[in-house]
Length: 278
Image 1 (tube, one colour):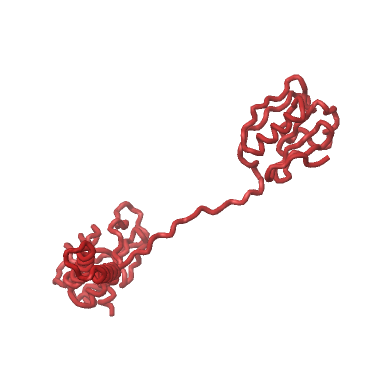
Image 2 (cartoon, one colour):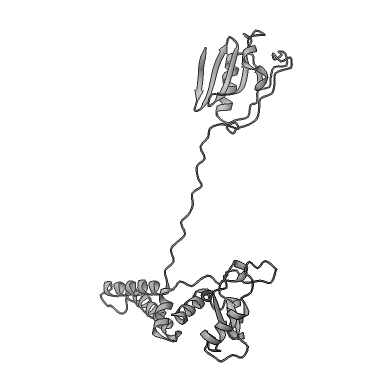
């Protein structure tokens, strides 16, 4: 008595003459009775614990085992002419192509895609300039060649990115910061009035301190004098943005609307506050 067939973790084991058992990882799944079975032989095996099949020959038992091991539903019906030891007709096979519950199967963690690393504008410009110079040199500086024209396009594009950064900045330092800062997505969540605020409004004492002391009664974005200043949370209160000086900026109504709409990115607002605080 012992294992007569095996497929991976599946086994067909002979228990007694005419009694076979299908196991998965040594756990009994189904039992098969051939014509050699004699009532009373399976009393010690807990016959009612798993489905029982009556077959006409050992070859049919092998066929049923192969279907289980290969994950196919059985097309073999229990023989109504023979009864199982529990007094009923043979139990139809369980149509389950998956490993049985409780089986020791290892779960493979899902593969995750690493997000692509973005380059700041300055990095993109540098790559374009280098590519352009290399292409121009490779062309032998032949003005009519395709390689020269493509290289010139890259070179001009890279220089253009650098020029735009400085032209749109108020100072050279801000221009360099634009080149080295990756802009945050304009689809960031905005502060809403749906009652889900996680942070209470900033205290009036803090607002007054920012307006009179730090901002000197001016919009901290454009520098214009404002009579009715508005304090803006860079990280919205709905996202848990704190009421501290590094997350608050005094704005005129015009620039407050732009900040709320995402026209002025959070990274630019944070950069502005860092320069003011320092």
